[in-house]
Image 1 (tube, rainbow, N blue to C red):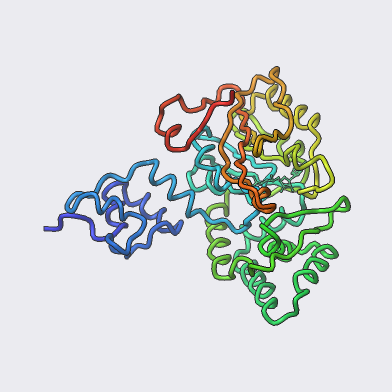
Image 2 (cartoon, rainbow, N blue to C red):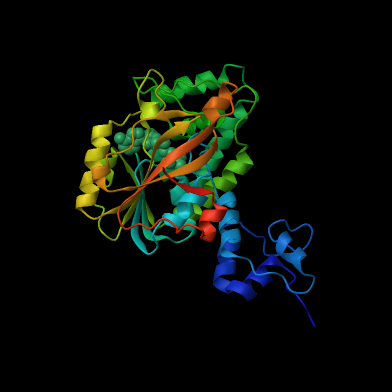
Amino acid sequence: MKSRAATDYEYLVARTGRDSADRMVALGYIEPDDPRGPQDSSFKREAKSSSSQPRLVTKDAIRSRRMNRLPHPLPYQGSKRSLAPQIAPMVPRNVACWYEPFAGSAALTLWAASENVASRYVIADSLGPLAQLWTEIIERPDEVSARYRSVWEAQERSGSDYFNRVRERYNDHLDPVDLMYLVCRCVKNAVRFNAAGKFTQSVDKRRLGMRPEKMQAAVFGASHLLKGKTEVRVGDWLKTTADAKVADFIYMDPPYLGTTVGRDKRYASQLALVSLIGGLESLLARNVRFILSYDGMTGGKTYGDPLPQRLGLEHLHLDAGRSSQATLVGRDDRTIESLYLSPGLASPAPGTPSQTSFSFALAS
Ligand SMILES: C[S@@+](CC[C@H](N)C(=O)[O-])C[C@H]1O[C@@H](n2cnc3c(N)ncnc32)[C@H](O)[C@@H]1O
């Protein structure tokens, strides 16, 4: 008689049903034939906890694994991938349409799609080639992966100014795959644009950028999650979310005031605070639910004032870890980011497992 499931797949079938286990395979979280045991990292702890009866895989454990293994084809600095576990417990379920109008690497949308949070998804960005890249990733993953491979491999046989030539070519022709290569290969994956919208960041000489095999897996994974249910839009967020309704939900991560004022512009377009507040007022008047990541503080330095209290938003602070900007200049500051919740979106009650395991803190 078999005392325990021989593979992760069998284990999940027994615990969560065949549909759910098949989804875990499709998303690449488990291999169907991987035996449970020492070489099986994903469920090793559960298997170890008892020789005959594996411990139940908890929801929190599965959620953190899922976050870490989600495809992430655009390693954007400022991606919300690492903050997703802290934001996830506050996101409503059974959403009709999920919007991410400041998409960047669309990290939260990839998480939402993996959790079936919504029936449909809209990802949008004012940077045209980035929005176009998302269309290509979702609709034509094979072509994007092949083109990325050829741009990436060419660097091995080209001179040291190869990155600069691709950057020049991108600035002239705005090819989305050139942008993908530049994001992957530039310093700290930190995109920078000048006032004319030209990509200006330099090459990171210590790394070659994401390898083509890894990129291919990430591109196909993202396409798998989003194809058939996602619309990509390009333009200002007010326009791309104009049709959002009560049953919908918007996750917003605009350029922060701290990256918008001053000489060094992080993104191709900036966002004035008045326009942001006006847009939030419009969403509130339409009863559209939203979560907004906005500004915060690093090493005691605060970026921007809190949003006006009259908006009636719940204001939380999330620990975003070490600041990569500070790391660049040799400091070890922590970044705290603000999260604003529209009325009616409940933050986890103090002492709940989510709060404990995601080190969530209420703003003072
Ligand atoms: C902080 S990044 C978003 C990062 C994203 N949350 C992620 O996980 O990668 C902000 C994005 O907003 C875009 N953006 C800037 N101004 C915008 C506007 N007015 N409307 C729409 N998108 C805008 C930028 O091109 C950039 O990709």
